[in-house]
Structure formats: structure tokens, C-alpha cells
Length: 188
Image 1 (cartoon, rainbow, N blue to C red):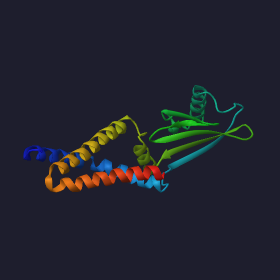
Image 2: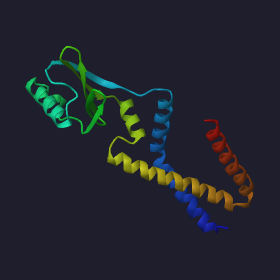
Image 3: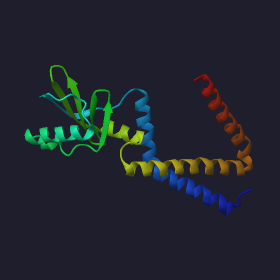
Image 4: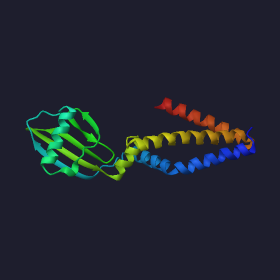
């Protein structure tokens, strides 16, 4: 049984952490819900260029990077530089992306290469935060949020189990949550 002072301390920390992480929890909940309904965001700006080239794409990462940087520099398209930091290769399509933008090289017929440059809109950026791919700051924040959420769940459960008036119902709800989880697992 927790003393009155200990219970008040648990409740205070439970409340303070809940208040601090509330904005992040709302963001994660909203973006998760939107993602379930296939709302993924998109570009706020999009530019497309067709390039005549004899090169066979996809190129090696460094070759592709050199090619596109030279193209942007020679065509006075420096606003698209520097390239986003994360590289990807998906079949014949390759490119770079980050929280803010995406540059994609798509091989096209007749020795043409289609280059698509997108600036991510707010919804896509929020989804990147939800997925944990918006950068190290958001990764750290998500880890701290996860720890806080675990602490909040455990502290709320501990307080409920230590209060005689709540103990029986708390145990029933714990069992109900466990059974719902197991049932959902086996129904999937």
C-alpha cells in the first residue's frame, strides 16, 4: 500500500508528464488516424523535368548524385540544391528524400529521364514525424514520449491497484484489456 505522500507524488508526475507530452500525443494520434484512412499528404510544390541522356539508369548513388547536381547547376535550378540527405533505390527509380523534400529520378522511354522534385506539404511532414523518419530530434522525442506513456500507464495502474475502492475494477479492466488484445491477435 502506498502512503498518501507517495500516492500524491505518483499522481503529480503522472499529471505533469501527461501535460508535457499531450501535444505530441495528439499529433501521433491524429496522424495515425489519418494514415488509417489513407490520408498521406503530398507535395506543396512539384517540378518535373525531362532530360535526354545516353546513360542507363539507375546509376550508382554517387554517379546519380553527380549527374543531378551538374544538371541542376547547369540549368540554373540551384533552388533544388542541396539534395535531400537520404538516398533510396526502388527498382529503376532512385532518388533522395528528407523531411522537407524529395528528388526522384525515373527512367523514361527513348533515352529520357524524368526528374521529379517535390516539396513536402504539412500533412506529409506530420506523417514523417508519426513514422519516426523526420530526423533525430523527433526520434529522441518519440523515445521520451514512449517512456513517458509507459510511465503514465504504469503509474495510473499502480495508483488504481493501491486504492482499495479502485482495485477490483482495475483488475477487471486489466483482464479485459488483455483478453481484447489476445482476441484481436487471433482474429487477425
